[in-house]
Length: 81
Image (cartoon, rainbow, N blue to C red):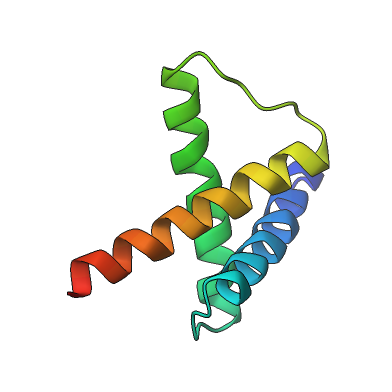
């Protein structure tokens, strides 16, 4: 496993954890990691379509992943209604 992948998992996990606390979601460790990585992918894609690209440093990637995870949690809640 490459260092980049490991770093992505760690940053994604932390971002997912932060987003779950921010949104008061009751998710576990694996769900946090999935939310963070999935959120980073989704929001990076959306921002890319708008011509906005996040820096490759850890902090901007964390912010994008966290915001994306918040977006995924919000969407999931809307679909449950």
